Image (tube, rainbow, N blue to C red; front, side):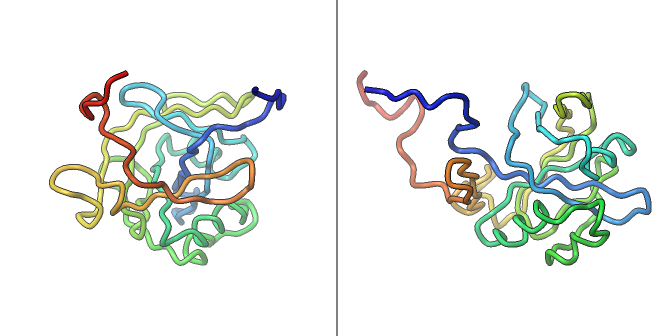
Amino acid sequence: MKRDLGVRTVMFPMPVLIIATYNSDGTANAMNAAWGGIHDTNQIGICIAPEHKTAENILQRKAFTVSMADAAHVAACDYVGIASGNKEKDKVSKAGFTVTKSKKVDAPVINELGLCLECELVSYDVKTGCLVGNIVNVCADEEVMTGDKIDPEKLDPITFDPENHTYRKLGPVAGKAFSDGKSI
């Protein structure tokens, strides 16, 4: 029998997204956002409170990048979520990250994270914090690919566990969609 738990932000897995922008002085900024995902075919949706420096930067530059946090960089990815860009002006380098300017949008790409979505602002609702961006390009390190596809085992992304306030790794393959041959 199921037990009522009330209203909770429980959904598994929650991707850990690292949103990178440029500050007005041209330095890189990044934040950890665990509430986001694909919004539409070529769009991403993320919840970012308006008081974050990242929200201000996106509204100024109309661009941002989204990288997948990975197991090798848990501490750095957590740090950019804890340190405030309004107070800590160099938190990207303090986290141990380096950046390269995106070829497609006015935002930095974090070199140490293997997968990056380069995005242009579509809309941002200051009241709800809901951000929508068009994905104009996806770039990935060869090390996280098998052939022409992103390999989740090589990418080794982490997810956020909102119930226990911790990060988790994804598990093994459970079956192939629409082709595993299992009967219903």
